[in-house]
Length: 150
Image 1 (cartoon, rainbow, N blue to C red):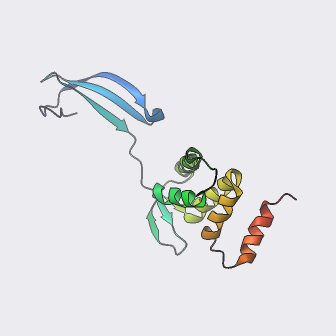
Image 2 (image 1 turned 135 degrees about the horizontal axis):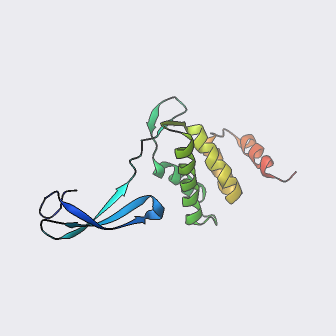
Image 3 (image 1 turned 30 degrees about the vertical axis):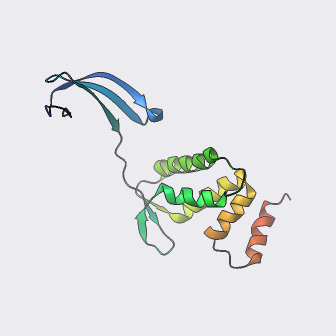
């Protein structure tokens, strides 16, 4: 590691500890040339994940797009922001575990709908109406009937 102060490459690690829930290693270093200390962070280099859209285009997965859809569906509903964030965190964990390079947008949408159905049924119907491109009231009724106890 090159010292940010004197640009020499000889340093020693003074302390290492996990950060960000174990996804990052924080290291305190001391330059052996100038004796100044600095901090570095080490994290796993992730392979970019691509989403296969309905029209078969491929684009990089972007967390903010899925989160924006959830936020819109949960607008003016009693679904805490922390729970909305957790849906995305859990989605990303599943995507990392099951998919290496590409995932269908259908997989992402279905996962989000499944989680929203448990969190808030109105938010679920809102998200489903956009995701499944409802054309008329009969589509809404079909989804609502599926939510009603039998």
